[in-house]
Length: 151
Image 1: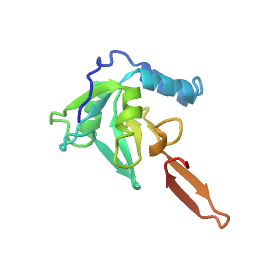
Image 2: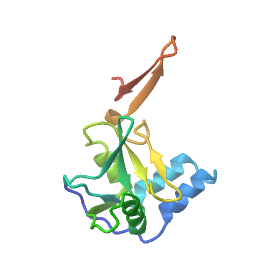
Image 3: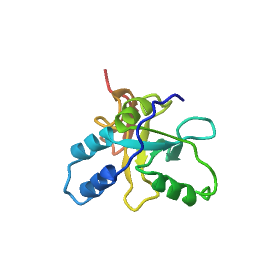
């Protein structure tokens, strides 16, 4: 995987924005703008790609707003004594390119081992249109999930 290096996060702008969103002091659009602008840390897997978790068939790319939060994640996975390679990049690069290049729809899981995590699902407005999920309900109560945008 090739990624441009970005400056390491030095403050908690994204963390504060997540908390402000949760308590209603910030809109989702404002939160997303901050995430896109700020630097995130993405751990690298043994396969030399970004680390992706799986929940019910949906991929989640792990991202962190600081090295301490990545370390807590490693400890929660009983891997705190191991060295974890990572890349740092602006959130816009993650949303527009990393998630768009994933082989299946993936959301972004930010600070999942922290007190204030947030999940950004692969929906319109968050990720590239080709990687979005759309739900539709049938008249019989069934539901369908479609990938991508109708063209």
